[in-house]
Length: 415
View 1 (cartoon, rainbow, N blue to C red):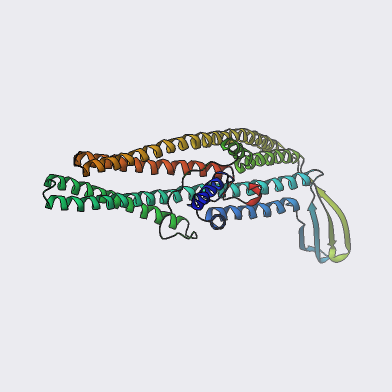
View 2: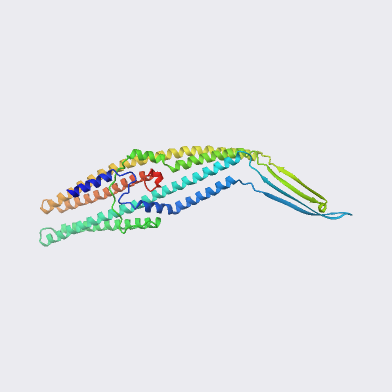
């Protein structure tokens, strides 16, 4: 009674678990987050964030610097002799009012774009890890199931050999049972090969992730507490892809305004010092210059405006794509979960049928062919249930990852 109460309490906790609860067949969330942060794809995106910050600092300071020019001339005049002459000019361009604020705004938006793209790269890497991890779990669960089938057929074959030795069964039955066992062993070998291939692929792609000796068994799918619809809304609300596209559209809008402002070029101001006739003439003055913009600057402004318009349209497309992903995640989670429930019921029924058929065979009321057929049906049903369970687990985890409810920074999960 106490054990039953304990199992009931544990089941209620699993059902009421939050959307980002740690499944028993997944690696520890803390280790996964560490592995994702250190993955080359995410690390490269982090370097691009650093590059964006450096570029933002460049924009804040501006491209204009002090320029120093000078010349020295040795002049010779008939009947007067030679003279040393030189001149020096120190000048610097200055941004016109309003340009510096636009540069600072564009730099800040560029950093936001890079940060959101880094988070999206982390999200895509998490999806890759999920796929490879479930490939390994599924192959391992298939292998264990096939080993159970082999063990069951080995026991049945041993019993049949005794019956044949006692002339209670025909040699043909022994041949049929041996063929079934050989087929089951071949299937187990194939599952083992798939498991090892999945493991080496996972280990090579994520070498920092410690793997247990044996792949954990696939957990049964569990619905999140806030419901699938709520998680679908979070996919859109927390999408870094949308945020990156939105900030990029804003950035290019600011850049467009900055390029239009640059049709009036920045002026340069400075001072000039000179000495002529070996110092007999000296002077100092103020110099100024300003480029006169023409067709090139006008075309640059048109280009920047078109790029800003394209970015706004790309934002609309990204919003549609993310919404489609959210709807597909919701639909896939629902249908895969229902498919697994049906497959689980089928596997249970097939297992019951094998039990009854085996009892009839032991009583001599059912032929061995019927028993082997029932075993094949049960084995196929179990394998289908494993595949359906895997697809349901994948679909639910993808919805969790896309909604940033698991394997994401704590601030995104609202913890």
